[in-house]
Image 1: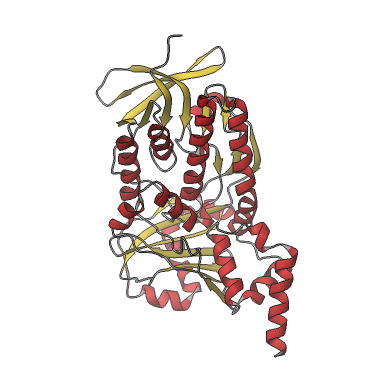
Image 2: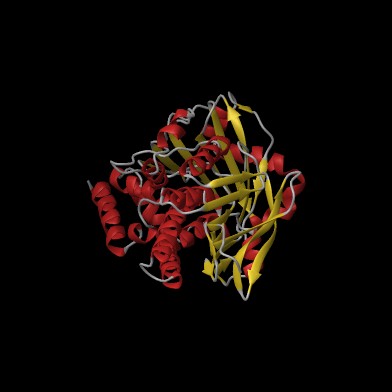
Length: 407
């Protein structure tokens, strides 16, 4: 095989792929990033960028551009369980707020940043084949719209093209910690529903829904039901979507002054980890790890993994360590960072009543601002669920509730 033209070819240019391309290009590597979409364009998304993801945008020098789109900051996460609500601050002193930008704006900013860093960006490019030689991925074959079929080669091909990844289908990586689809949800954009900087979630038995502000004075409202109800509800999903809000009368009253501006968009996703690397290939973002969207972790996960992959590839190519060990470290770091949230997300997405011990803890946290802030930071991936649900922290929250009730 002749020397490859590129150090890396990245398939997929959204929240995982463009940051990988940008970070590698900033270090002087030759990078090609391709996407079948053209930008700006939309995609199914929770939109939410939790505070750690905001920190990544700041590190990359892109936060001001995101804020300039008019996307409002979110300073409070409120989870309404019916009898009580836990409302707290999701961030840290350095990154106190979240944002939920429309993907038309966010992805365009990321793609442009990759190009400005020196990566070659080909929009409207469809990958038709992953090249494999002697068991090693060596490049891609594909074409731009109305263009000829071309072959491009690289030291590494990065799959950042979602859970239906073309690269993942070819390399067939090991999957583990698998869980089935748990939740089916639909969302639309509403006008006339001011959120005042709040991300609101409502837990109502076998229904869950949430609302938060995005660009253009619009609010995203997403709601869903357990996946086992999918076949029953699919014939009239719009009715089920609108009826669920009646389970929270105060929220439903606010909706009377609002207008649903778009059609409903919905999906349901499986839950899995994939081994994210092998000879000549790496998976990043949803192509390598996917969980239900109820906690809105996807963009943050993509940003974190992009930094890990770019750092690992730099270490491998600079000779600091071998490719295998660098990517094994990426996998281990990723899994350690997300496994507690993965399990917590699956528990929430089941829309099953919480175990008695959990229900007691959550009720004890109500009114305790420190505990409510800590819970908000769990949802925001600032604090690990393992830390919040640790025995000593649970004891503190229960003791504080007991002292308050006795007083």
